[in-house]
Image (cartoon, rainbow, N blue to C red):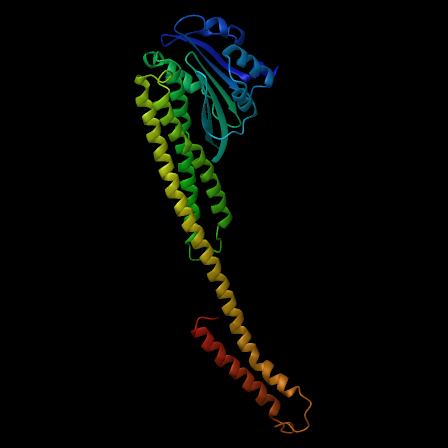
Length: 326
């Protein structure tokens, strides 16, 4: 059944140490023990499993509905003594940025993570927190920090990837012989950057709210870690803002180059049009059916007219060539 596959981890902790892996049905019994909290990790659970989680932890209907459907904005909501967070994740896979979501239920005695879409698992986060029992003893608040910090850390490689791709397109843009404007590539790059920026920016407000209004879940000892997350997010958003300005400038340069190339084509067409106007004018004049026209009975008239046309075209071609029109 999918509910079994969707349960990644379900563990109980006390005093910063892992007690044991437990089943979903045993959660309510474990929570009755003083000083114990539960950390559950889920991957795209179905409605039946979410209903069981809701029953065990007493979660609000609206939060459970959001966590099951996914496609939510980054946010922090409060339902009684339980917090519900939505984080947008990003990761590099084969040099391509993939976006996903992680929904988190946080209470004084539990943490539940629900992953949707492409995202890295939190096994490394769990291993790292379990290796620091002194910090893990602070409870779910430190677990939440570890998850948010891990999500934010994945943003930087994505920013580095976008910057490397932008540098490559920028170098092509300023090659003298390049005919590629890369507008489509710049547009795609900007779209990915805006998605990453939209995922990161709300985390500053979320961490600020956690620091100011939820001291019961985020103890004083953990606040310094959330300030560190805010600093990391600010660094990512600053890099994203700067890169967005550079992409906008590059797109303007690309559009200007397209216009310049079009002007060059127009100039060449106009130049050749001027050259062709000379024989066109002469031939149209002699195409008229008048009885009395100059040089009609002179035997050298035909080669003289052709020679004059050729000389006129050559002189006009040289003049336009010097002017840069041809």
